[in-house]
Length: 632
Ligand code: 6PG
View 1 (cartoon, helix red, strand yellow):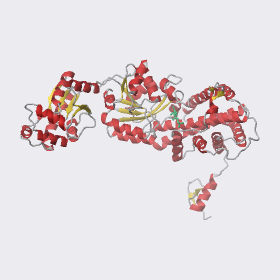
View 2 (cartoon, protein in one colour):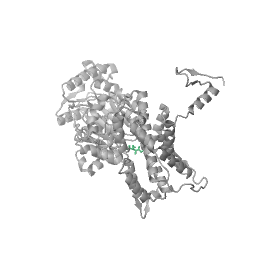
View 3 (cartoon, protein in one colour):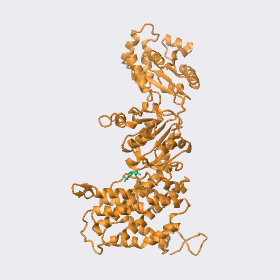
């Protein structure tokens, strides 16, 4: 793991109205931390002191020279790598800005909070306090409570206050932070801890439902014994050595934006946030820009592999600024799955939201792979009449061949799962859900003008399952009572090739449109292990793509499609005749038909467009590219 070379400079400013106990607390804290104590009042020019003694409130102008002098003192302490504790009222946010100018977030603000009655009683009981009570009210009028300070209730003894401050401002000892202890966050935390990373973990506090989640989780796993758990965001951030690396595993969309707004005030320039959720790639770019304005790095990364992958090694698809990536690379590579040659299944994908785009297409390919397997099941169950156990045996045999994949292997397990004497699959409601990435992939394909027809077919198959009207009219299955296993296998094999082709071409188009310069062979390589679409085919494609070719122009792929084409036709026709929906195989067949025969149809579209809208067309006997119009 990278060594922490960051030097902690502890500048504490104890703020609050006069009488809140700043000097007492400041002196005690300085003593406790062996730091120098400074009373900001000692830096007032004599005119200010005179005004205060005569009961005249100070103006902002009176204060600005004083605050600037203090700021210079603070900057000098930081430069000399020396900490200090300063007692200073710092009532307005503008005063605090003056005090903290150019201090790179190295000030810890402690706000001593008390109400007027409590503080006025304290002042009255003090002998020799030079501030008349009438000024206290003007201080309360001036007070703008800080949002980024440790807030301490002054109604406790000074020792209690010091304890609370030190508890909340512990020295940063963690080298990596992780936010969001859902299923994926928990597994990634354990994976990081197993690699020897000193971790801070944060989960939000929701009274009654999510309380002390991080602490409880840490206590459950031996490997987390060195980790620190928090539900106080400020304390979490303070526990991580700068430049901080904080991995978010929280819900994509608004919750991610809301969380960023909360954490930004606690971060410093140079820190890097990594978003590991399934975020939309345009959101990732927007967030990068927002955080860059605060000098905070932002890496958007796809993480695939589900719960087990996150624990044992996921496939990781990061993108963003290369310098920010360099800071987090050792951590991401350490937890990633390894490919056959032992290299991490984690690689820098490119700038902006390219990592999340690639993860989105991964999920699109995943949707189509899942749908194809479901359609194979439909053939074997409803045409050939096999039981779930028999289908599991067939798919298990396929798993020993070039069709081997993670998704195929889990389907074998699924089909063997029993509830009592029956197969569990027969009790599962026939309505497919989704969390949106297949939808985004389909929309992105449409926006980029790319025919990712199989991703679209798989997505719409899920939607159809949720909205279809059952028993629209009854129909008996006619015409087909058996399809050979070899045909089903070949059709499935052809369709998978086309699914992967469409997915990689979608990424290629995005990379060219957005100038990302992504490397397709590297994407295929990091998808060979850890992720949901890992397969023998992916290993083959990782090698083929190194030749910088379109998959359909590769001879071995062409041969395979040529060899399996007729089976794809037969399965498509038989299933259609039997009235069984297999949209993904049919999308594959149709895509292949469009690619394999030059039998024009789009010329009719062009002529129609020109007829009703004078949209013009190009001619196949004019290679100048000129657009023509006909008065039809
Ligand atoms: C992965 C998965 C993961 C998740 C999908 C599920 O790569 O680990 O893709 O990201 O399982 O998002 O998506 P749906 O709920 O839309 O099927």
